[in-house]
Length: 149
Ligand SMILES: [Zn+2]
Image (tube, rainbow, N blue to C red; front, side, top):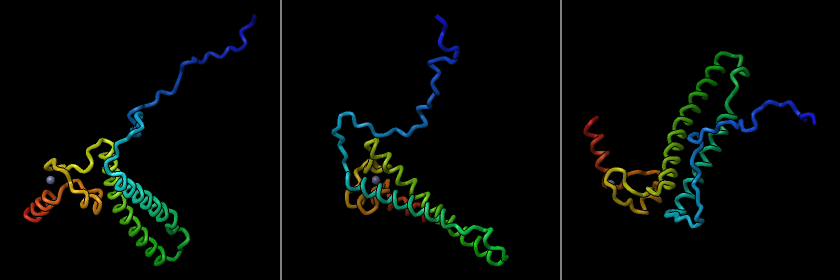
């Protein structure tokens, strides 16, 4: 007869999840995912994991400045830190390229030259999986860069 609980919380108060924040996981409802370059995807994913591994190691092995009370030791620790930061910057860029390549695979536009729209030969993709340009366009771009600088 008595209401069991006086909880006034709205039962439908669910945390509003921002859908856009979640990276679209490639949904393979059909099951038959027509992966065009399964081995290159594997290469990319392996490379990605290796970089993340390496970056994690650099971060955890970073010398703790407090353990170097001597000034010169601290200075060399800072040099080490700058070095690992440079590595991380380079890895970060490569990681971004890998992610973009994987995104292009998901979007089914991987292996298409970003400039001329032609197919990038498999051999080139295999050798340089993060590339976005065919050899002709890459060469042109490099020539342009040389002219500009
Ligand atoms: Zn091209």
